[in-house]
Length: 288
Ligand SMILES: [Cu+2]
Image 1 (cartoon, rainbow, N blue to C red):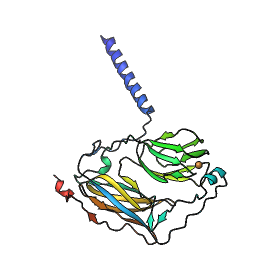
Image 2 (cartoon, rainbow, N blue to C red):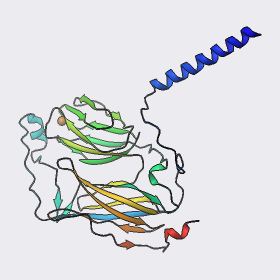
Image 3 (tube, helix red, strand yellow):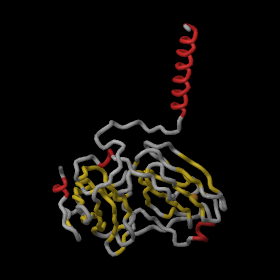
Image 4 (cartoon, helix red, strand yellow):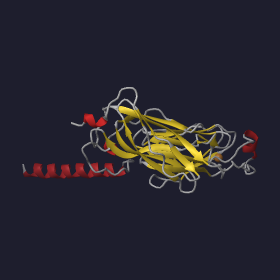
């Protein structure tokens, strides 16, 4: 009887040890966050939209033609290759990463505490004409990023994050797509190519899907945002990046405008004007 007990204690101890070893070897290096009221919950309340335009004030720097002598294949495929750090058309700025940084839903919960489903579709980052397409992009934590090489030459993707692991891999012409993901929030991860020093991309990694990149006409739309009040950030590359922030209140089933401006004399974004359409609902009324 006593011997049985001893064996029971030993086997339980072994199980605990095995379990802890298995856990410590796991690929997930995310530290658990402080539990709160909304921790682990999925959001199911009313939603709205953040939409806006990113302007560039003053005369934008002219794109510079890139010297592709390092790889003649690039010059052949893309003879007009030029810098993409400030892409302006009719005073509107492309490639600005806009995202909901923090804030509180209409029912008083921190948006950062909710759990959001990981999309099953991969985001594609293509190397085409010896530059990255898109130049700025967003993915959710653990969402698949499919890196493709559409060029008749070799690339070497090399990202240099701060909180995610660094990664560096060659992708010869004709090689299959490489699938990667990021396990931690990071805005933004710089990407370069070891073969072609001019190549740059920036990847915003968020645990939620509330981000967008301004298109060629400067517009962006972030939909499905829980009704609530948030800090929205617009990020433009250049040096360590430039950020503009704005407070917005997203109405239930409506839309709020968040217009940003970069360039000469641009301070924070203009104060947002509330556009409620079509159902007029005020989030505070839903507080119970
Ligand atoms: Cu390259």
